[in-house]
Length: 209
Ligand SMILES: [Zn+2]
Image (cartoon, protein in one colour):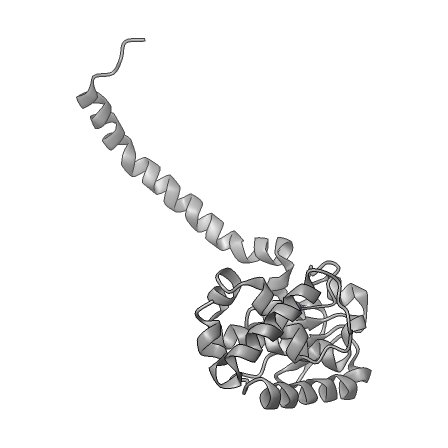
């Protein structure tokens, strides 16, 4: 095939542009329209945004559970953790939504795999049936506070994991004397760092990590 002259190629490309743009726009709007549905179906943690649709009942603004008969227990874990973190780590600015799952099915509907609990940005915390314990809820609230103070994106991308997890295990007063690795090593590293830095400089120094 004879090579297309540069000026002709240019003209052809330009001539096709409006149609391609139009198609691209259409494709983009379809993708955008489908995004929430796709996210809901495939990236299940977004379900913390509308937990009722995942089948849990929300009592008040901040506590949801799939077993309302255990609401009092959930509420006491919640309030104690807010108090604990506020006093020993730092004041929480915006109280997080916490979904207390009494069944594995509830926890799995958020697509969180084998972990015990998870904090999804500052959008919400999901607690699995085995994590209805003070130190677990405190651990997740510390993650919430980290995201408030360091920024959702920054806490996720640039702050080292030894700090994020080491701090949560250490300051939640996790009772396990020895944690599985790498958490044990993260906790020791955080504790050595924290001893140097001190509570007053915690967030300013953390932002430099
Ligand atoms: Zn953690």
